[in-house]
Amino acid sequence: MARAPLLQLSGIGLTFGGTPQFEGVDLVVQPGDRIALVGRNGSGKSTLLKIMAGLVQPDTGERTVPQGFSVGYMEQEPDMAGFDTLGAFAASGLAPEEAYRVEAAAEGLKFDPATPVASASGGERRRAALAKIMAEAPDLLLLDEPTNHLDIDAIRWLEETLANGASAFVIISHDRAVLRRLATATLWLDRGVIRRMDKGFDAFEDWRDTVWEEEDTARHKLDRKIKAESRWAVEGISARRKRNQGRVRALQNLRAERKSQIQRQGTAAMALEAGPRSGRLVAELEGVAHGFGDRTLFRDVSLRLMRGDRLALVGPNGVGKTTLLKIITGELAPDAGRVRLGTGLEMAVFDQTRSALDPDQSLWDSLTGSPEMRVSGRADQVMVRGTPRHVVGYLKDFLFTEAQARAPVRSLSGGEKARLLLARLMAKPSNLLVLDEPTNDLDLETLDLLQELIGEYDGTVIVVSHDRDFIDRMASVTLALEGDGRAALYPGGWSDYQSQRGPAREAPRDAKPKARNTAPDRPEKPAAKPRGLTFTERHRLEELPGLIDRLEAEIAKLSGLLSDPDLYTREPAKFAKATEALTERQARLSAAEEEWLTLAEKSEAG
Image (tube, rainbow, N blue to C red; front, side, top):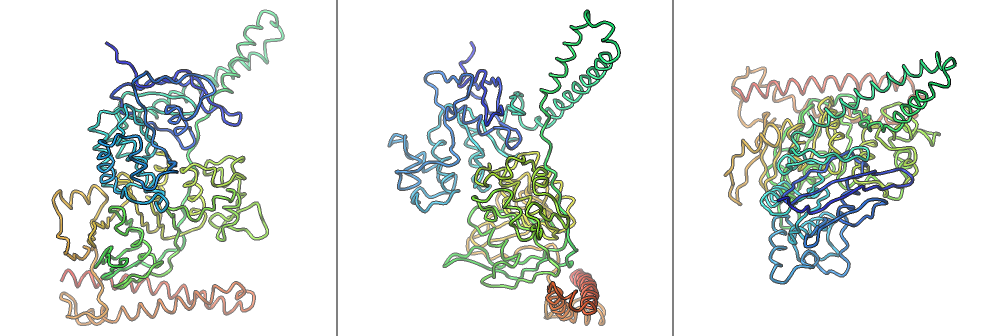
């Protein structure tokens, strides 16, 4: 006997600003369905989910939920007016004897139910909204990017709860690991058309590529037919006008069909350009510790970051990943320990809070008002990696339309804000790319492109992320902050970290391990003579740190001199001499660092 569906959409159509968002959308969700809803940013996934939840009324079509079935939707911006605490909001609608479910969800999602609504962060509010719907356990869960603001432990809790629960669900997520773990079917929203594949997400990309290949083949055949019929119309219609009007009308229909075909949205034309090479050493931390008040975030962190490394910082929320990121990049001084930054660093930063974006500015002003992108005397152009570009043309590279150029930033979706921030970041050459939660809200195609660019980037990358698939694809080394001040360094990405860490490796709470390093530490004054070196090499190893410090000081002084924009005009000879000296000092510094690394490694091996 066929089961009654939990939800059915029939002939759904919706138009925004004269442009159809959906036309004739039909879909059915059955009990037990575990569906990934995928599609490009801006394709309407969130809108479709709201139609399924009954929060947005379509222009045409019907939404049907049989009596006795419940549908729950996780709100992106929950309205908590009238509630004192996050727990009170999450428990609203539950019977008193069921309130324990909120406590269990709060523990798994890592937020305090007693937190006042007035002081709760955006991430805490989203976690409370997720806890509410998980505690209610409706027949159908509609989840829009539920893993945003969750750390990996909370994501695992969510995966286990959904996998073992009785509720059907439709989930939108950029996290490939989540979709692979949970989805048994895939809904693909593409150019207003919904397609269903009754297979998990692992099969999606092959299926998508096959559909696109079939489309391309059919379009090519249609173009050839139109071309042939057009030639006939020009050459033969005058002699056979009356009896061939049907063929003329058929040609018109072919042209109308071709015109109605909506071209696929391309990928963003993103590009990363490395600036001048930095020194071999990018950053060195020795015994770094930091905390707030009586709480120690991390202690005894030692790390050497070399040019070309891809470092991932991982760990639960609140252990200090962003704080350590700021210490590595020199933005924040540690409570204890030593931090040394390399030379010639040109940094580009992707901030997870999107603080570089003013929500009241237009996209146009957000780019032209940026100091590093401003083109003097040209209000309609931006400087992109040293070349002036028209602001609209550059926005189109990142899939924004001309109409969006004057729209306020606040009107953008989360994925569009991320793309705008990437447009600002990628406009200037850099040799150190700092990415704090870059994957939130990006669609899968943009994530693929970002990963490809990082792979080809001739510079150093530091990333903070909870996206396990993203970490596996880009990281060459992973620094794990494991709580209670503990930190450890592992070669490879997330999967490598898990396999090396093992299932039951748990250090005591009072342990103070030093982060393992893949390269030898450089002592400023070696306590004992290194073994395996000749007398001359030992002497050279001892004097190199002082030489490196002197070269760095000279480079800083010369860089300060050359930063004067009028120097070339005022004293061209002095400008040329300083430029030559800077180039020479940078080459000597790079050679000295290479020599020191070679000797230090030989000493360690000896």
